[in-house]
Picture 1 (tube, rainbow, N blue to C red):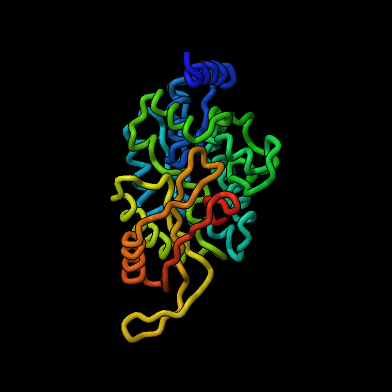
Picture 2: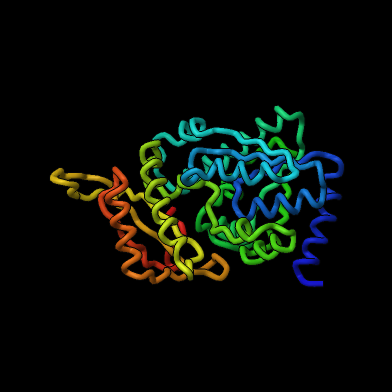
Length: 314
């Protein structure tokens, strides 16, 4: 029996012992971690899982609809909560990255608590927390690099009997392998990571709807172009910085934010190297963003590895 076979068997038994006949609410993002967690939970306690997807308004272009479509074909109860206005209201005037993460994490939990009450008392909350989330949030002897919304962002008092985190001992490659073991398709298992706070930590400074819209369009272009590569980076995205620069569109002077492009290769997402993308690819991305996206003045490429940087900018 392999390590992951044994891990799966142990957690299935642990989940059954912990949950019993009660229902369990899974905080669902549609990413690799929460999708693998959903598959594991539904295998361990079939018919007892409720997946709640909180659309906080910080998803990528069309991603909320894509996630809903994926889960509509699975034998689990799936609920989509449109909470954009609720999250934006909490983030008015907030610019500090740690504050953003903790506010989003706390509001996530409150939304789940509200949904659980609507469904009748659901005592257990499940999360797709993985080992690097815990380490970077200051747990397991790690220094606080950034508080992951599902770890450092949790409020002190929760309206749940217990939290179930079956992936908390695994790194990202192991989570992917476990997903394959559970029969999930490559299109889901091999998705690049997307942070729980979403675009909220890829918009520098205060978050607004207009900034989010600029970033969604720029990020969509980055992903469209890099998706075409035969040897794709492990993770790639756009960042809307809070640095403004003068530009020219037509004969008109502009003064808009700079968009940064990030692409990295990594074995475990604890460390990474930036990806040396071909210049023709970077040029095409820059031309498309500056021509197609109103509100972006110019494009720069991030060549910082981790450490000393992190994969995300906030």
